[in-house]
Structure formats: C-alpha cells, structure tokens
Image 1 (tube, each protein chain N blue to C red):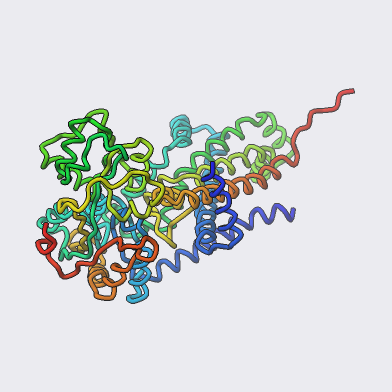
Image 2 (spheres, each protein chain N blue to C red; image 1 turned 90 degrees about the vertical axis):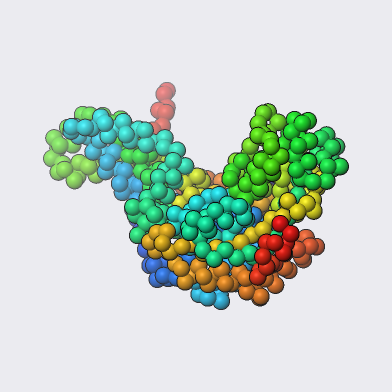
Length: 283
Length: 237
C-alpha cells in the first residue's frame, strides 16, 4: 500500500510544481519577445547580451531564434516585440510597409564562400562572389543552399538573381536547415556553400572546407535591430522593445560585441557599427 | 567512433559534475512531460473506460478519432497549438506561447489519445463475464469500476509508459510552442537539436544519453510494478 501511495504522490507533486511555476511566470509582466536569427544564437553572442540586458533593465527576454524570414514574419504579425536580423533588403520592405519601426544598424561581419579543397569550379581565381556563383553553375558542381528564407539564404538568392541564374538541378542542394547543419551537409557532400564567418569559426575543425571567396563588398552581413509597430497586434511591449533596441546600440554593449569571441577564436565574430549608415560601410 | 566516446565521457562529466544548466534542462523535461502525462491520464483513462464499457451514438466516430490521434505527428500538433497561442491567435490573450505551460498543452494533445486508446483496448480485453459476476456478488458501481481497473492494471501501466515515452522524446512540438529558450523552455530534446546545430556533437550525444538513461529508469520502475504479479508458466509434472 505504501508503494502505491508514493506512485500517486509523485504526480501531485508535479502539479504543485507547475502551479508554482505558472504563478512565478505570471508575476513578471515585463516579458519581452525577441525574434532573431539562428546565427546570433549559434554563435553564443545572445547568451552574453541577453542576461546583461535583463540585469540592466529587469525585463525577462524570450529569445526565439529562427531564420530571418520567419523572424520578420513573426514580428509583422505582432508575435514578437523586437527583431534582430540580417537581411537589409527584406528589412527595408517591412519598414516601408510600416510593420517595423526605427531600423538601426547594430553590427556586421561577412559572408564567405567555402568549398572543396580541390576547388573543381576554380572559383578562387574568380575573386568576386558573383563570378564564383556563375562558375559553380557552369560546372554544375554541388552547392548547398540554406533554402530556409533566412538572412543568409536571402543574400544568396539576391546574388543568383544578380547573376541572372535560376539555380536548379541535381547540383543545387536545398538544406532547409540552420547554418551549422547546412555547413555539416556541405562538409559531408564536399560541396560549395555560403556561410557567415561567425558560424564557420564557431564550428572550427568540424568543417574541412577552406574559404575560397572573401572580402567582397557584396558579402557584407549587416545586422539591424527594429522595434515592432504596436499597431501590428495587441499586447506588444513597445517600451521593452525600445529599451532592447537602445541597449543594442549603447556604447557599453557595442564594446562587448567587439570583444566577443576574441578569446576563443583569436578574432572578433562581429564588428559594432551603431550610429553608422549603410553607405559608410560601402554597400 | 571517437566522437561517440567523447560524448559518453562528456555525459559523465555533465551529470556527475552537477552541471547546473544540464540539471535544470533535465528537471524541466521531467516536469513538463510528467505533468503532461498526468493530465493525459486524468483525461484519457475515463474516456478510454467510457468508450470500452458503454454504447452511445457517435461512439465509433470517437473511437476512430482516438485511434487516429494515437499517431498524431508532433509537428502538426505544434503548428496548431502555435496558431492558437500566438499573440495574433484566438488564445493569444493568455500569453502562453513560448512558456512551459504551452509545451504541456501540446504534449497533452499528443499523449492523451495514446492513453485513451490503450485504456480502451485494455478494458475491452477483460472477460465480459467478469463485470456480470462482480455485479452478481453485490458490487456497487464505484466498486465495480475500481475492481475492473485493478484487473486491467497491467495494460494500464503500459498506457502510462507509452504516453510518457511519446512526450519526453518528442521534439517538433516542443521546439515550436516552447521556442527552446534558455533557462525557460529548453528541454533535453530541443537542447540536443541546438547543440547539434552548433557543432557541439559531444554535448549533443551527452544530452541524448541523459534522455535515454532517464526514460530507461522511469520505464524500469514502472515495469517492475507492472511485472510484480505476472502470470507464470505453471510447473507441469
């Protein structure tokens, strides 16, 4: 009988825990939903910045990291309060439509094109990203695309469009996954792909694909923060959104961004650019 | 092979080094899936008994729905629960999206049909004459139900295990409605996906091993309770 009693006690205990947990969650009406990209999360930057922000302001942040396309869509529906993303052309569209407000540059790094050591499409001599993609298409050598409407994917699509190419065929592999997983596929299949430098550095030795194209202005990866227009839906935390956006461009935060990753990778993963305009970066 | 070994070593390090984050993730997984299983039992057992023991209009429709529900894809559940709980959704005012409560709701929807379906099957497997006999010796309705439950306890425990196993190992719905938020809704399965994406395969393997160890331990205890009074092959002389 005693043993039976303990079987029934366990669930009662669990329910009790849930009730307490829920009461604690309800207490804080300072909830803030940040929709952001996988690269800020996978690099570990948000694990540093979010606790800092919470400590400074008392807000409790729910970070939802998805592809930039989805992050922006969530914000436009009013299902997030603030967005930290990296797809300038998409972002400007949302700002023009009045869905997102007050777009401010936060930081940048760059994309690089990696590929097999033997470089079968000879893109290393192509120098620019555009010429490299054209050569990959001509040789029909394997290329892995994110295929998930992320910031990286939208840059890739913009490049194909500029090259006048509609990529399709057996050589064009659409992963539909985050950057880490996509690099993993490219590595296993010995294929070309476009990646942000941060994720590539973070994966380190796990990826055996050398950088073949870098330093092209077309490969600049710019992150911006935008506040969600309170008109997008009910319950948008506009004050919290502004506090987070202000925090991201504050000098102290920008300094943390500059130093992030230096110890682990020997170089910065992101470069702060608050207060600058895109033209000043040469885009 | 070396990677798997590294994962095992990492798992031991994380568990016995009492890594606070791993412990928090593990206990959150247990809390969420434990609560979901319990709620599924409270809803599923009565429904299963009702479906097994009574006849009413529309019964076969509900049975078909329960049987379909036993194979509900968790991502579909996740999508629909998200649609309802997003701020822009009909239940958005509850502000439940990206919370443990949202994950419990999704997991209940996944586990409840499994519990109901298996409960129904276990009651239908009882000898129909048993109920008649019990009434014959003067059992009241609550007594009858209790005695039938006792009679069906072995398959009922199987229902508990199947329900719990279904939700603790589920990743699609937890990811969508929970958001995999560090310190709030990150559970063993979603953390495994994240660490794999980050390329931290050793931590991913370690989390996977912890999940396996956890489900094994729980099933082991439930199995021991279940198998205490098994029917033994009689000794024939």
